[in-house]
Length: 500
Image: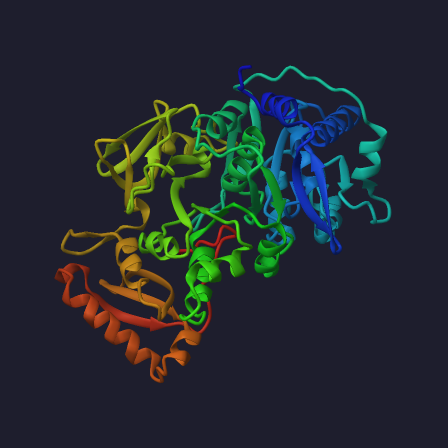
């Protein structure tokens, strides 16, 4: 069958993996499961609920952490022909209300961990006509579970591949968030165009925020298409415990998490064989980590290989649904961010990577100026400085908008300097920028590492690191100013440092 919409993916998954577990998650101390057949039934109940509220075709927001209710609601919304608007659960209520208003949301389904939002929208968001709780314990608020029971039954709506499916707000490191409009074809093509040869029944653990397209497309949509058993991590504080509980074979991670995990692996008694350490930390079955969302030092490929784990680095952006390129299990090229997706073509214009194809967004919602700046004749200007090799493997060298333009006309990519200095265990987080016509590095040191190594003067150690770094750099790339931070940098919910 042709797979061109999320409804097609749901139907394909229910037909091929009907009785198999689609999701596993904890309720108290017990593990519960829902099959692929359950998910189709429950998502159709949500679609019928949407139709009963006369919200079919409208914009419907979802706020919450990853949960089965969130996922069933998302497919129920999109497969009814309506537009799903996932919202970052970590945002302040005022910022959430601003996004709900900008996205023309008329219905809200929320997790009661953000009960404050449900209360705020009553006065701040006059467009919203219906508010529904995933738990159903708030007085005066309709219960999603009850409404789904009331609306059980078959549902089918005509969905066009190129109609608007979802609006996802970017969590950009600079500037105002933009509502990225993605069609059914954008998401379904991105999820299905590349066969990574992951067998059905593979157990995964979903760790990333579900309102981000990396998690939504790769963990959830692609996961359904290939028939994985997706286990839901209930807290970032319980990742280690849940690894042992669910014993995943594959996980998606961002570099910050990968780096943090490696530090724990590194600190284990070196006398213990590394495969035994990996078994204890990861549950015994993990063999692959897919990395995305930011740059990962290629040295981690080798570091994790010592523990029997393969890292596949990929690259993408919300505006491309999101995957632009990924390394392959059978052709994993260290230093690259992978091979261009088969449904995309690419070119480099003035050192900037441009891509074109069926995963490229429809545009930014109600932001024609920003859309015109980013899309040109169907080409998406990624903003990333890059080059491609003869086999269409992509190598990223920096961000165009972050470039430091020095008085002598030289261009410096701060990411290049940050990546090199981050190789030191003493550097936990770093931001490089221009200040007063010189290059400055602001560093948040790893104080736990400094203590273990007996480093008493951390500032002097960091300055020595920079001095050694400068020796191998041309004059215009040298760092002349150092700031040592006492607290972590402010980050987006995708764990990227905000650049101001």
